[in-house]
Image (tube, rainbow, N blue to C red):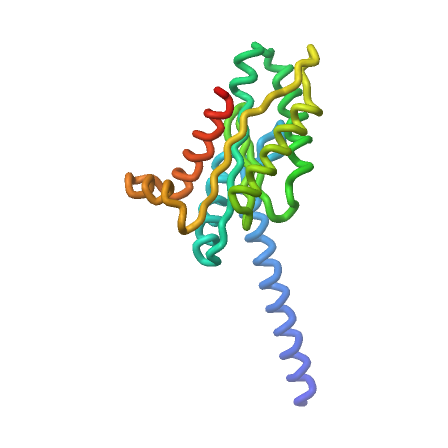
Length: 197
């Protein structure tokens, strides 16, 4: 008799384990449904990446490790060359294909945050390393992507680093911004400066 009770106990434990696994899989599926993917580039959308950046700031605080952002913009290039919508879509697709070569799968976060703007979050990467990566990305895009008239694409880039010691972020947080907003402002400001230069 104890044998049957033991078997029933094992079966009950297994079924509870299976139910928990199914519940977790359902939760993951629901979480994935909330992730907004840009249809053209297949990168995260702006809202989805902002949520992930808040997580990265929390991780950075907890682990006391920096992470960096690279902001990339084609807005000035598009305005300078007056490209048609379909031409710009082709360029965006090719820029993302080139960008994906520099993404560490499972670590980095890439997103399309505006029509011609992208964001790359690099966990555990310092500012000087991010600047080297940004320079390589800019060079690769210039060499590999061009307009239908064979004009090389010149993308503007800006970098920012989040760490507990970043004074400029602390100053902007004191003025009422979140740490993510402050970090984005720094990266966008650097990007704007590079597009003017």
